[in-house]
Image (cartoon, rainbow, N blue to C red; front, side, top):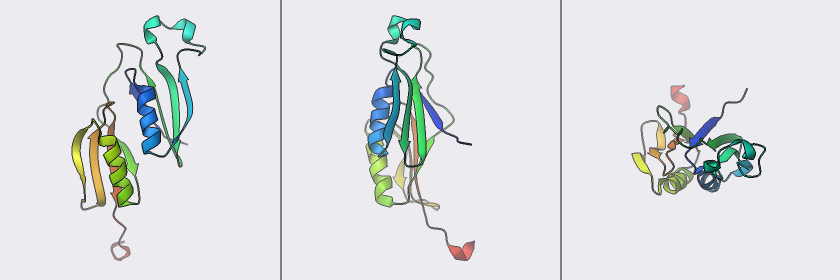
Length: 141
């Protein structure tokens, strides 16, 4: 079984995933836009170059998404996409890169469970958590 986050956008999916690929050191494996696709002749002209499906791999993780049909986008609610890293500098780099134009929900800082933890909603509307856990204490296990 594989569980993946699937993100929806209102016409900015290609731009958002280009950023996510850079920030996450990932690779865009598939980007299928409306023009040139088998769907092109079946959608209204106002769909323009909306993305029908995109797949990004970063290490063993997969993130997918698409643009919604015009007028059907709903902002994400009740969830965040978590990025777990082992290195404080990497957590700071990722949080900083996603912060441009974002709403910071919780600044990146040390918590009782993490060397660094922070939450934001990026400029595309995607809610993120960046989590760099503290090492486990074998004595408390």
